[in-house]
Picture 1 (spheres, protein in one colour):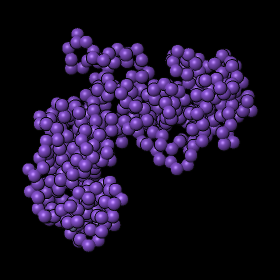
Picture 2: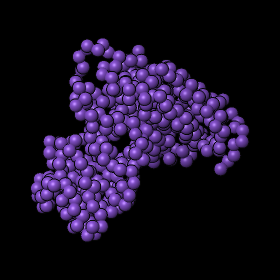
Picture 3: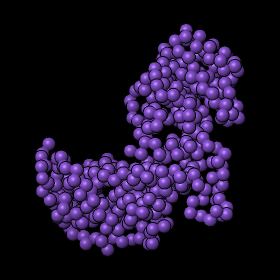
Picture 4: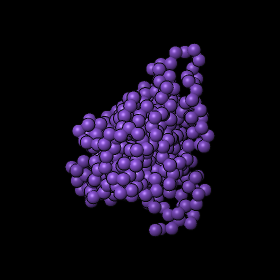
Length: 269
Length: 175
Ligand SMILES: [Zn+2]
């Protein structure tokens, strides 16, 4: 390999994008070429400088407001009588939760979490949701929310109770519940059904360590609550903490919508 | 960092004027909402949004054909020239805010002056933290093209910054 051929490999080395064989060949060239060693160091320095320059730019404060107000007005910049293309605006008008959630998704800070420990409860919640909805997992039928609440709390010896969210605005009502045990911990599950995709609400004593690997974190500055979202095979979960309780909402409804539900119901601890 | 900050950063460095950057980001959100059904939950939303932004930039501000072949035009290609030489080593030590600001402005300026086909991969990979594959998806070009443009682009950028990056920094200390 000559130095000219090495150039692109050095670039990819800086970006950690080399295949094993490329890595071996550039490393062997670098071992004997001082000039390319130097070029490598300098390219790394340049990348760092560019990255730093990037972080010096952040969005102007009024841009967020401009976007939000712009989204509220149908057909911004177009003639008012112009028909709306895919009709998404009118669709959104009927689904304020979705519109709101999209804004959240687009505007809230998001961090993808890397965790090495498994989070058995979150994963089992996603799995048990489907069985619950399909009726293959037995649960107590109780359509009176207050009675259901009392029953479920009683079955964990009153140590905690279900979240008892009122989701009637979504067209969902509690139809029953169960207590599950995962990794030695009791979990209260409440099942909601109605006109929207069924939803299960998992409540248990826990911490943010129960967030599963690869979850996305939405740090909500207004509510001062962290929401964690995760999905598996079309089933979505949104987790948050209220005091010593962890709540996971699980549903097949789109993640933004589910996030909006969680956000509208969550109480800062 | 929010998607908004990220998108604004990309727009800021792609666009010629701040006004344009505002428009690009606003339009990106409008388009993202309009196309939301095309987004697959669990996939990379940052890349998805960035692609929308880039496509808008491309449609609206880019007069030339995408990925025009300009190899050679900018390749005053020296045999492994001295283009990296005298760039400071990494970890230049603490810099004053002012110096950092000045330096960032200088780099932004240099970036703006290199052709877009070289600038975009640098923005995506170095500032946006995208992998080559993600950058290729956003730019609708092969991964190998991302790599070669990056390599070329960084050298063009360096040339623009030559004599600046290696200016002695006051108060800089080695770690
Ligand atoms: Zn060499």
